Length: 231
Length: 218
Image 1 (cartoon, rainbow over the protein chains, first blue to last red):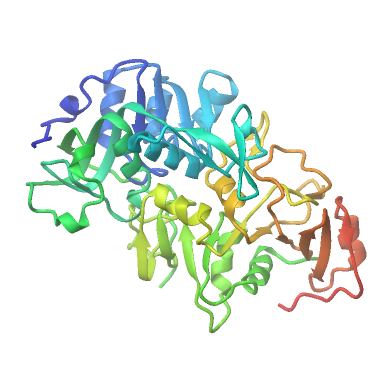
Image 2: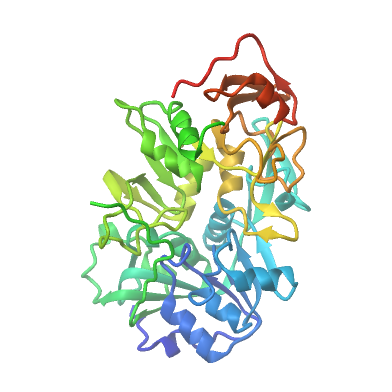
């Protein structure tokens, strides 16, 4: 089944204001740069974005924030973004901060048909407020619900025309779970290859989870903290 | 005079045991990797999705796709593996990681920890800290004994929003090694040249001192 779309415009077609999006990536690593740039251009507004981070001021989701296109963020860590902090503290931006493991599992659950699950993370903290508490094996857990999205946008290293995806190194992060949880999942890839070229043994995300795939252009792949050692 | 950040890391490294998988948080904990005792093999997990994390890359060899949870460019060791975030936190919640070292703004005498939020001031988010502290059996907090204003960070009760409840078992600061049990800080070791009286005066929570408290061996 051919999932290829020819352009980023076609890839994000149908994303409208007020929709809920999932966007893969950890920090600026493994983010769908092309699609984010296109969303900025398209001007869609009042988005709810589920993404571990919110980019930096001038890259990644930070671009959508600068443009005030995001109504609500569901994230685990947003520390690298001044504009985010400003909008949150002023109340312009609605923010739901949730533990990183719970965020990952809630996306996975959404894609896996599990409506909710219990986790020890966040028990006794403000994350647990209003959530059911239940003890298992003598330890309290809180009930967390699955997350879903109208569109999930992921970034992969290689993908084939069937939508099978392979990620590189730590750019995998949230992408596989989000790919599962989107009603429509868009994959932007660095290398788009014909079906049959990827080794089926090495597929990370099977094509069944992907509805649209396209060859991304000009990946900047910005590094947030360039740390090196001397030779 | 107590230890500097490297000294704290060096003391924590003595807690490492051969064959352990270890998660190091951002800040002082990251420095622990520089002091792995000789003859011991440990593997570092970074919760964004890598096991077998190595040192920073040589200049010019940075890879934007290869970072740690602090978003720093890293390398991998032989035998490393990559995985998604759900698998990563399965390792953590499933207690497959033997030791977690993380920083804190406050720790209380019953083992509560606060390290993610200062209401109205700093709201960066908890990242993976809540999952880590809720699940790990063996958590060491690495931090300075007092904050920049000179106020004790070892308290009767945390004043900041909690990250986890009754989960911290050990704290290593610039002044001391302390164990948390039965609702009190138990003083195990003093930093070189630091007196019990100084530690006592800088610990707001209940501090138990029994017998002669040895100096750290670093």
